[in-house]
Length: 417
Image (cartoon, rainbow, N blue to C red; front, side, top):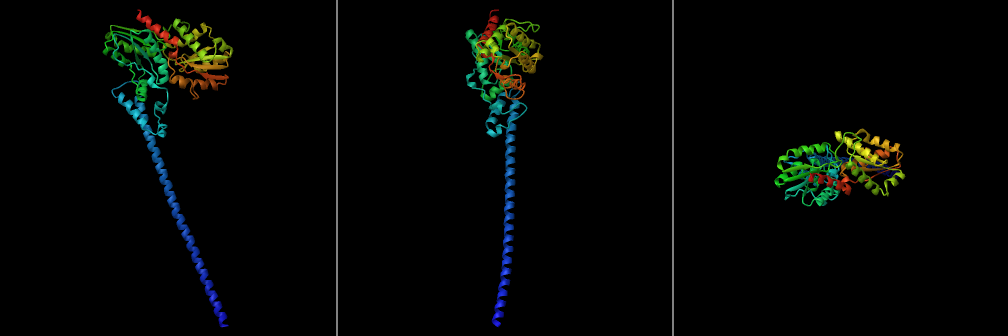
């Protein structure tokens, strides 16, 4: 009996011990688990916070670096040259080169964007800035608005200059641009130095030029031509003779009905090239295929804007019923994109080929005419839904031989005066 009682007591004690021991072990395990989990959560949150802070700091540093370049680009996107211009151009390029690819995409300013330095417009080394000294007594100064598109500058502006030099080997052909914004762009991006009007005229004086002929590559007697004449006026007494040749389209005329031989040459030349580039044997063949050619000029509020209307009249006089003239600025009104779209559609043509009526195929041709933005001419013609196809030809007038020879003829006129 005693043994049974003892056994029962021992069993009870063992059970109590196990229950107490097991209970303590369970509590310890749970507490330990909570404690470890809490520490891991705190560490994870702290790491994520640090990573977020670091990322934001990096993004902020990237944007600041990009903004600095944008400021430097905006500083040289000006029409006036100053004593610091050369340094500003060099500083802007150096700052751009120091950016990472990701930072370059962030560059955005009043006029700055990644394309300012980043866009590939061709090989600038193929160009000749024609800023050499040792000019001699006779100089032909070819004055252009200019373009930062290297391929176009070589084909169009240099093409005209080369034609003039070939035609007049006894004269030294030199270059001047009237757009300082473009001069700065080319200098900063490509290291090519192009004279503005004052620099070119000062160079001529310093070289002892006696007879100066200025051949503008401008399309017409517009605002840029007027500015050129003002610049030349200040230098008239520095040379024995100073003569300014006609721009491409010659005299303006009083109204839309007044056309001249120059406009006829230009109309025939540009249409012939457009038809050939489109793969047709003749304009009539293109017409039978439902094709209309639209030449897009710049447009202007200057009184010379009537020249665009005269070119449309000239197309009609030549029987070019499927050739239309338009302008980016929409001046004159009938040359606005919407007006031209309606004019082409009303005549029943279902295919459109756009081509620039500009000496160079630069920014306007590549972006305003052939760009992918919704406000480009290609996009607006397509969006109208009135045509089966809309194609573009990105070629400047200056690369056409007949156009080059018309400039040569204009220079000859003043040489023979």
